[in-house]
Image (cartoon, rainbow, N blue to C red; front, side, top):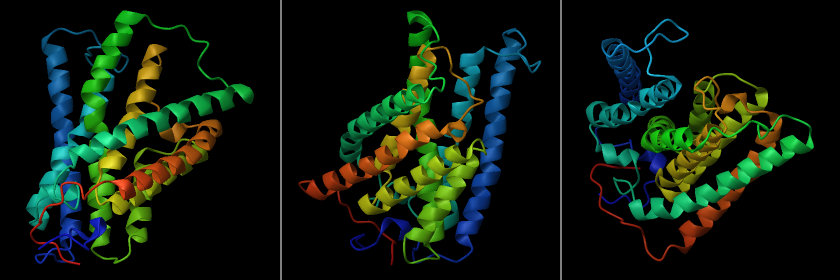
Length: 304
């Protein structure tokens, strides 16, 4: 059956769908995700112990702050195969239907979205930093640079782990949760808002501005996902946000796993909101101007 006319948030509504399947799949993700996290942690801890690494602040052997940061990203990245398995095993549908209405990642469209996302994040970081300076807040620019060797090392590590971490969060929130709730609601807005609130909550409660910004990020990423029929634009924005902000933090020796976007001050949130809206507008414009349907394929099992 063709996916023509089947919106992204309704792709989990297959002929084999039952009301309990999204609940079963969510439980599977939670349980399997915890197991995957524990395995990742114990592999890291065991390797540190076996190689005689020194104890960290928590009394556990560690390869150092950069390795612990990478461990944090990898611990989230392992959710990517878990979410894909959930779609296949608990909903009896192709895992690729989490990626797009074409049943897979549309790589050409993703490559178009990445530079747009990069420009958006650069504008956001520049605007937020400028606003912080103008309002007398600490911008972090007065901290000395770490030097080329540690900067290049941290950048290489970030390029290896951040894309998978960001993609995993997109598949969980804009993919699984949006489509799971989409089986119960015909319109897209309840699924979009629900997954956005969960996305914000998963980052913890830092500042009201940070939570609000994360929720808006989730809403806009969810809307763009439904509008374009896939996760590509949201993945591009999330990857560039995490990657570029982490690279800048690494240049000033401020990489840490303890702070997230939930700790964002109001200046950064104020700069981010118009950028997010602008990103959505540009992506929508590019989507409308695409020369032909991108890699449109026939997908078995999807119904309205």
